[in-house]
Image (cartoon, rainbow, N blue to C red; front, side, top):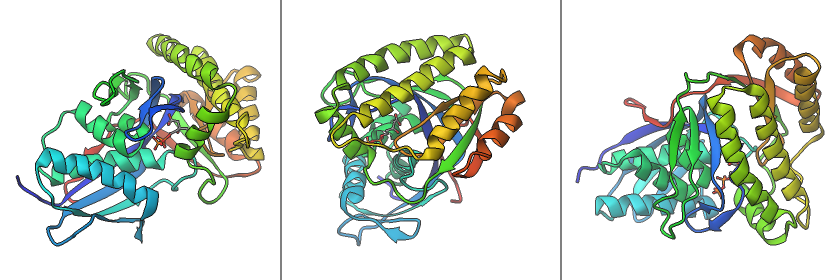
Length: 331
Ligand code: DP6
């Protein structure tokens, strides 16, 4: 076994059909499959340095020490990596996000995919992408999709140990190079995390069962839209799935409302651009107020300008569909 310093970058991913409901809360096993795209540029750079002098893992995120629930999740991933490596040595970990933490832009996805990639390398463990996605998943469910680039499917699996709940690439980034506009809305971390929000929906949303059935159907529908490279079809599935998730959230007691007025402003603007002006665009919303818009390259500037002009949109980020987690040799 050789222990060394390793750095990895992982991008965030945006679910087109969402993961919102678990059959196992300990190792993040979902009740339904989900499909996402991996974004380039936005993500997390993580450095793992095994250190025999440490009695516990230490972690800094954007130079701030983390503890509590965050460190528990990190501990799960690191324990699994130590078991594979056959060592007790703990590590010092530093992570820097290029995406705002906990604003509904899946920063936990990039964080745990980067952690898993850097940790297996630092501990000298040789794993395939399926195993890597499983390690990332134990930190945060959606992280298993950031292991791959492009268009990614996370299979829900059936097994209790999660060995069949892994992600796979369906299309490369180049195969359908849609562009992405992130409309940033709202300040500061969200009040209810995805982990807690999901639990609340499972317990108290009257729509929860119907929501999970919808996800199973939407994944199949999304695959058809992808095969045909059909933006109109994709819009029906992706917008419908996001709205169904938010309806499920809003119907819990107490209702979970992640939206701000600007969220709805962007939703209407995107619909208007598509239905009245014939532009190829569609929206999705994760567990936060920000909206992610997909569009074709030819319509990018008009879509960006329209979305950026909505009151309450603090800034926009243009990006593309990109590669998955990778090592950064001198990071
Ligand atoms: C709305 O993966 O952050 O972004 O597994 O509890 O860490 P945990 O939850 P997380 O949930 C992501 C929820 C979502 C939808 C999605 O990415 O599929």
